[in-house]
Amino acid sequence: MAKGGFPGFGGGGNIGNLMKQAQKMQRDMEKLQEELQSKTVDATAGGGAVTVVVTGKKELKEITIKPEVVDPDDVEMLQDLIVAAVNEAMRKADEMASSEMSRITGGLGGLPGMF
Image 1: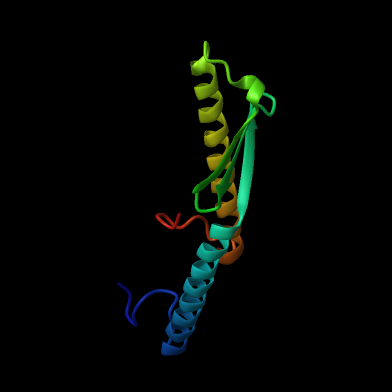
Image 2: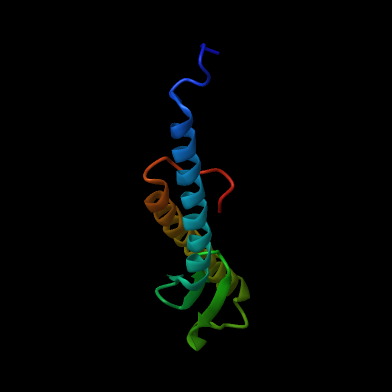
């Protein structure tokens, strides 16, 4: 390590500012966590035969199945439609969370383990 401490940290004031920024980012991320709980995304499969609603925290809130897609002789198709719709909704929830996170981190990139 170079003489004088960590590179890029010339004095104590910089560390103080860094700590304030980190604390603000932490508060913003906590607020985002709460907001993501109330935001939702939806996805459909089978041309709208199955629709699911998921929160930004990836909690499944609702599944809607059109009656005409319910065929007792082809339960597997209905199962596949549900899986496809849920997977798409989860992907959309991830995208939404990533987008909101990048707004807070200012383009620092994803912080592992946050969502």
